[in-house]
Image (cartoon, rainbow, N blue to C red):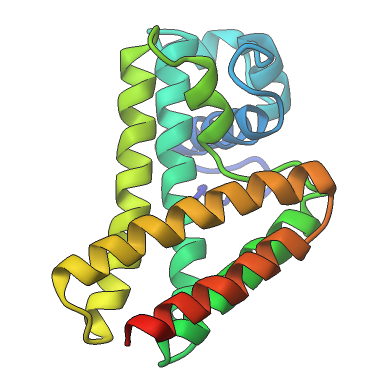
Length: 203
């Protein structure tokens, strides 16, 4: 959580934490909206209200190092969003549908700009930025683990939980991109309903 400062006062440590958080959050948002190639360090610094010097102070490895931190931030945000939906009902089928609805609402409220925090960056850097690819891989694995844990708590076997988690995540990821392109919640809502039916059929 970003350090809150009042009236520009606060310790040096608080200022440092706040600046880094602003830079990472700005980078995460811009990567979602514009992709890796379309996002430059200068733009990130401007959006974060930070100097170039401070950006390179925290991320001496430059844009690639910052992108990894931004993806890790997006990983946690998206995982929290998944948990919010998945914890909204005892019935795992209802929880999955609620999760899709929650994602659809968040996407609409962002003006269809902030979908999956790793998709565009993962595809743009495929095969040429190992550190970024690893961060994207870890994010997807984390989200699948969140889903799998939810299904396991509902009584599914480990194999069933893992297979359902893989299927639901892939479906939601595809639906989210489609919703962005169509600028409509319907692809996510429809996918949520069908994933709920799938979960029920496995119960």
